[in-house]
Image 1 (cartoon, one colour):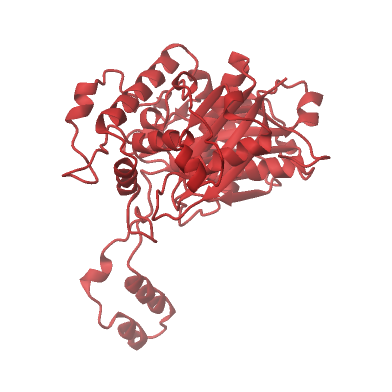
Image 2: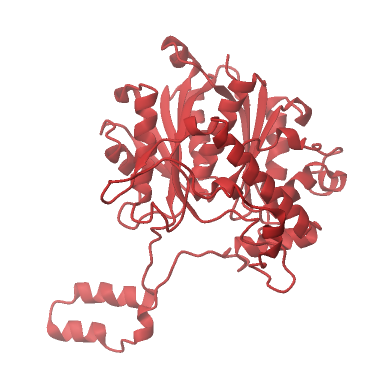
Length: 432
């Protein structure tokens, strides 16, 4: 992936807050507060001299109207040096992945040695705007100097102008929501309701086992719950330990109530949470005697027509990332795939193994191959753990890097689908 003369990028560590269902314990907090909590703990636990941090690159999908540059606000709230440059990125559900790749490019090119990357989302704190008509009226009113000008600005006012406008949940180009697009994929790829429910149940069981075995807790930092900070959130609250196929089968379809198969049970829920990863040049990490969890071997981003199969981006990005890494799917010992919907995961896995998809969509002679279920999302995924949009990518990178170190597996692949028909894939190599 990296041209000759560039430096290897080391993943030194990563942490996240608990991922909590929107409207629960984090409902009175903000994405900035959650992001600062993750970054502050990252710096403390990894004993980072904050003066060494060359930059913070951080993502959010639904930015605050009052604090839009979340990266810079996280620098302030996490008590990092105010001399630390900070840039915010938005790439839908791949936002923290973009933050990590932007950071990796800087390190590889020698433009930085130490970068903090990640993302945060608080879907309990979604900005609700006024209609454009009322917003324009308020602008005119703010400029009015005399009573007559103010009266003119208010002339023709109608109560309907006060109707709130929430962030869009549908693709602008197609008018379809993510869930409707998942339904489309399920139908076109013949993904059954039973297969989706079975996959969702497996995600919950794996996540529960990950917590019970003590493998996931070290990645999660406690967060005092604002605004009174009298309680502390310590664990994810979405995982359903007692879920059964029978219970999942009783849930009604959400996006196509008559013929649909996508339900609340086989979809990722709206979630609050944040994540952060520490990236270093190999030279700096070794000079400090740090343990390197993994190296960033390669990555790729992809895009397709949102009107086709919106969440199929991973099937396009993964072959490119593997080519750039000089590897085949058979070389990969662990796979982490973001679970927006069970239908999306199963559709992408199907495309990985499809000769027709390889030939017709990718122009390749052979498919990528089948992913062994035994190496896929070993500790659950977004369906069970939750999906704070901009935080998920860094969560997946952290979990995969830790797993490579723990299992002594050499290579891991991670993928993320994103709104707009976008996809991301990254190959990690175990640290030495």
